Amino acid sequence: MKKAFTLAELLIVLGIIGVVAALTMPTLIASYQKQVTVTQLKKAYSVLNQALMRSEVANGPMEYWKEGKTLGAEAYMTKYWLPYFEVVKLCKTPQQCGHDSNGPYYSLNGSKNSHTFSLSSYRIPFLTKDGMVYTIGVTSGNNYDPDASVWVDLNGARKPNTYGKDLFIFERVLGGKGILPKGYDKTDAEINSNCSKTGSGNYCAAKIIRAGWKIEADYPFGSK
Image (cartoon, rainbow, N blue to C red; front, top):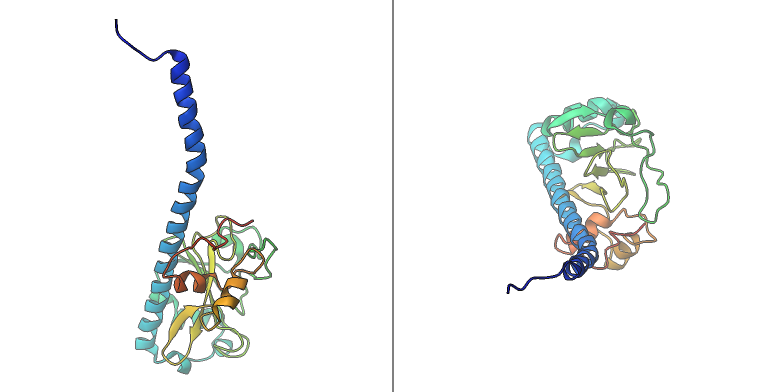
C-alpha cells in the first residue's frame, strides 16, 4: 500500500510556505531595492565626474569657466555639460520629463520639498539614456556661490521622488576635487541627523558613500 499526503496535509504545508513567503519577501524586496539604489547612485557619481573631467579637458579648469548667469542656463549647459552625457532630452518643463508639476519632490521626513524641478534661468534638467534625470544648478551669482548643487533622480519621474530614496544631491567643489556628495564636509552626526526620518535627506549620498557604498541598517530607506 503506497503512502501519500492527504489533501489536508498538503493544504497545511502550502499554508506554512505562504506564511514564510509573506514574512521573508518584503525583506528580500527591500534588500534588492537597496542594492539597485546603491548601484545606480555609484553609476551616477561616476558619470558626473567623468563628464566634468572631459569638459575640463575641452574647456579648462571648472573655476575658470564663464558664469552661468552670463551665458544663460541653456547656453552654459550646452557648452560645459551636455556634450559629455548621453542626453535624450532637455526638460524645459516638468511635463517633458514625465512630471505633472514643477514641484514633484518630497523630503525624507515626508514633507513637500521646495525644490523646483525646472527654471529656465537657474536649472534645466536633462534625461539620459539610462532613465536618470540630472539637474546641474546655474546660480544667480556665479557657478559656485551660493549653490553648486547637482541633483540626480535615479529613476526619472517614477516614484517615490524623495530625497534619499531616488533623488540625491552632489555638489561641484573647486581645487580639483570634482563632484562630491552634498554634505561631504559635514560631520557624521550632521549627516546622520539630515539623512534620517526627521531630516530633509540632502546628505544621504554622503551617508551611503561614507558607509563604503552601503545602505546600512540605520538608513531610513523605508521611512514614510
